[in-house]
Length: 118
Image 1: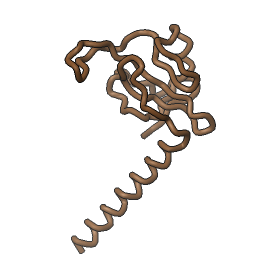
Image 2: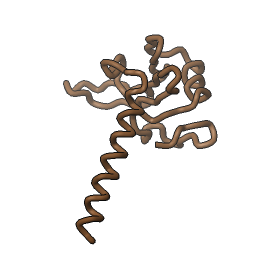
Image 3: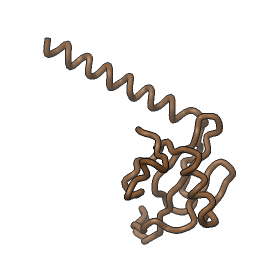
């Protein structure tokens, strides 16, 4: 996933995949434009609903762009989430490990396919 900056700002934030890296400028833009709906030190939800969708109970609820500060590992857009619907725990650096493991698994699968073709 490419890090989102002011230069490659998406037209539709609703299409941004959860756990997408963003730069500090993007993070601070959403943090400081409007007061956040929720703010828990290392994560917040932007102050205006992006859209609304039915939840698992059939209630029509607003969804907010959600961001996390992962310290020295950078900043993340956690995607569109219902109010207070954060991942139970955002472990610093875990998302980078998961991304690396996913890439390694894809490489192994591709190597297996290539060896079957040969």
